[in-house]
Length: 227
Image (cartoon, rainbow, N blue to C red):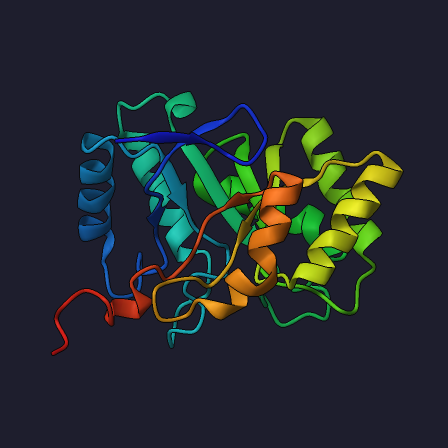
């Protein structure tokens, strides 16, 4: 397994990150445990999840993927510091008006919920899942900065951000002396290329932001099973 720096940080992550959106959805607990065991055996040290996985399934309250990972962490012999654990927040996690978004209120509640489900006292990479037009960027970044300073989060990242918004966030972080987004998660694969290559790629290179593409196999389209 190859290891690469996460953006301009000193953190080394495996070149392949295990995505866990299927955990608790199409993969039950036993299957999910087996997948994580195999990933570790093959040298992967980087797992990615989100609090909202997989709330869209009827009867699923959300947080199920995180819960399965937490239960696996509790029974594995792997030391916690050997795993780079990434999760995300933003999506609807309850029926209340503040149970979603990137406000300080929701961020502070969401991180505690994720820590509890993951059965850990820190998150290596905490990512905003998508933009929140109703919350000022500086409110979001200041809350994330507080989490890093408190030790609950090590690094922060974003997902599904357009280039202009990512640059604005970087500028706010620099001007206000707040932590920067160290990574981005764009939708990028051999079929879906333009969104990343037109503008986001240049931002990543210029600002030293790590790129963690999601859906690299285009939801199975590029696996070779379709003729």
